[in-house]
Length: 264
Image (tube, rainbow, N blue to C red; front, side, top):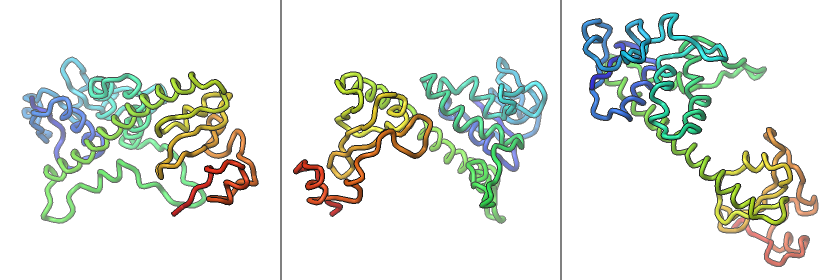
């Protein structure tokens, strides 16, 4: 298996494209060239060659035929590859969709020069992932493009693997949460026997006010549920009299002897 992309300066789309393909074809050889004769010998070509043809396994986006998303964001080479190979990598359609919307679409937009945001009055522009990977293009005479490209591919690979693991865990955690909540007699409260990320799925339960779970310190934690689609705020605050208290002071106010905790 030979995977070919262009030589010279690299961007996030060709870096992530190769990272994706190397997960599916770990023994493949990566060739970087713009020579048509070299590209013709490759099994998969991305981000170079002027052709988008899934059957021929050519995935360039520098031509009208590469198309765009419904949002109007143009596909990059990575976006085209993701439509064809992403589900195989993810093994789960929901994970594929989450990575597509969170990572791939943004890389598509940046690579095609489409702005995703406006800088606020603070005047500070975010340092995004595409810019980060671009930083690994050669600096000085001691570095070369091909070696640095593979450094960037390694970094992109860690991002892909981490995102896949994260979203698989999110899906499993949501299934566990919903099972625990279904078993709860009082739909204002759910008790989780182990900690899982649950802020988003908790907010989708309209009657739920509090979640209870073992915290990182080993003590049990009560957490208020945010209104759906709200970053801050609570559906129902805990009593004002409890605020800022811990240890015996909290125990005295709540009337629950073992409700106190110590930061020490």
